[in-house]
Image 1 (cartoon, rainbow, N blue to C red):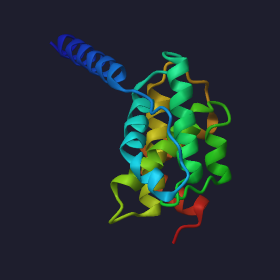
Image 2: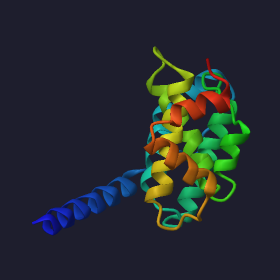
Image 3: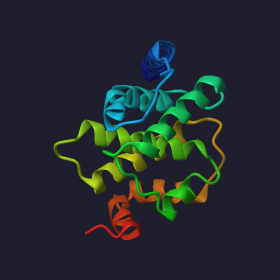
Length: 170
């Protein structure tokens, strides 16, 4: 019975992931010249963050590159979301560079969805948990001791303490 249930869940997950991946379109012809331009694309940032999380690396290389470039350009210029890329975060993407885009996109998604109650610690925590989830789910990831350490800290409920220490949050 367990095997049947597990198989049904995996098939459902696969079908829903496939459907989600096919419905996402990377924004085209976007221009970021004034603050309103960034606001106009916030829904696309959220969709892109979700797509990057649900799409395996190497599945759609052209689309993935376009999506990561969109996220990079949006995060570099938006006046409303400030991401501090501390060394500890940079270390998480040195072996698997795609994790840096997961971090940026998920931090941005959190900031967009929590404008009224934005909390920098919680935004970083959401982004780190997304990095852990993507690393764990990605079959082609390269082993990374830094991410493995985060996984261990998360399992021990010490991730937030690590974050406070590394980022000097009060």
